[in-house]
Length: 125
Image 1 (cartoon, helix red, strand yellow):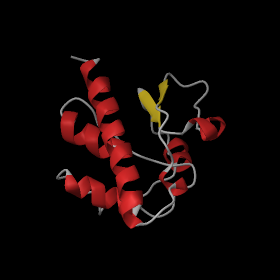
Image 2 (cartoon, one colour):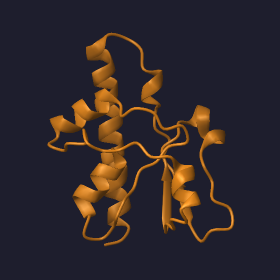
Image 3 (cartoon, helix red, strand yellow):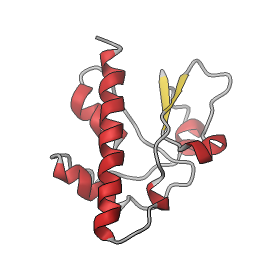
């Protein structure tokens, strides 16, 4: 979601890529709530942060979206000239409840990520 918001809102300034420590399938709830705000992420590929690192990809900023409980598992890139920013975001994999309750939690995550992306962009204006 952060990748999609940054590329949509400021693709002329930034090129965002998203990757995870344990990439799996794209979260169907994330696809649904992003569609609600007019952004289609259904074709996005889930990438591994280690694959990007091994390919020698360099980034000016790395933004992690680990919740506080999992912060020790957030990736770090020692020795690289990369500024790391951590946004504590609730892990959608932990959501419980019926479909509508999970969607409502995912909407809160989406809106929180969007607000953080907008604040990040403003830092460069």
